[in-house]
Amino acid sequence: MYRMRREGDRSGRALTVFFDEPNQRWLRGDWYGLRFLSLGAGAFGPEAIHQSNTGVLSIPVSQHWPLVYEKALTLASGMLPERGVNPNWLVYANIPLDLAKELCRKLRVDLQEN
Image (cartoon, rainbow, N blue to C red; front, side, top):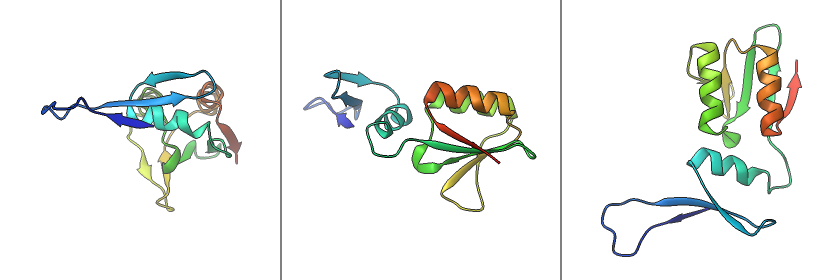
């Protein structure tokens, strides 16, 4: 990932981009979206845990989902995420298993069900 600024531009605007090496192209988007995309380039893929008895979906903070997917979770639950007992995890309450499965499928996230 790269953050680029035009030389001499005093507005402070920056462009966040990700170089998709296999396809030899630059991709532009929001910070969390590009950061999440860059995870796919690593050795370990993204993961999530859904607790069926409580409807809690947990996602590692380091694997924060793109904003549009986080918005789907907050709209479904009516609440913003909180840090879990382990502060390295984001916790989304009242997430139906079907929604968790569908979003994980779209994002290619390994969903563990407890």
